[in-house]
Image (tube, rainbow, N blue to C red):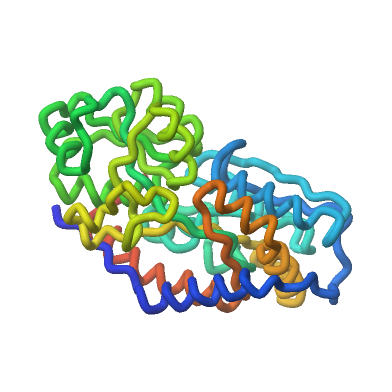
Length: 334
């Protein structure tokens, strides 16, 4: 089947430029118009060591002692982030709990799942972007060393259908959707293997239990340098600054598969607007700190922030992008 993804490049370019400007400006810590909670809990959709966990902990370091006395990162992995979302839905709407999640929980899941335990429009209040990154397609020792690019991987998978198992950090995540678009477009008989986050999927990739895996490139770089895996392609419009010797999917003939993963903060849908705006200002100041920007770069990430309204607009735009891809090609998670 033919699968195409045409991102709204103009909107996303403007949003990315705005985010970069906010970060580069070095926003000062705001004088809070709302009382700070004694403890802030950051619900996280990924397990320890995952990209959401890394983002949550780096932001927590900046907030501790500035916004509140203590910040707790509460990892709730599983069900492609929905466990953490449901925890947010039940959390108090007083500014003491935020969710750090992949954008897919708001942009993709409404079309991917026949039933969701939450309504993104009612139960998730956008607060701020948190970071953006490019994805990488990696293979491990289950794939012969002679496979050096995507077309060679496709040929190998077609000849070895029983070995064509591809992992992802969860059904319905953007890495999973990129895999589906790529391999379905090639008509491959591949098997999707779902994991509760990126780290356990990486262990099985490097151990030869699965053949390939799509993850944020920041999780792949160290293991690639150590020779434990190979990265065959990245998902940006051009080569990644972090993996400049790896050609993009677009360079290898997949010009429609330009996808970037992003993460954002959300609060319960019942949260008063003034609390949301105050929290957004605090998070944007944290995301603008040079130490955080540098820490993100170590993992192949770009720091990004936004106002609640800007994040809501981005969600709406990407919903319009993903809906025809998912529905038009019968990609379902149920």
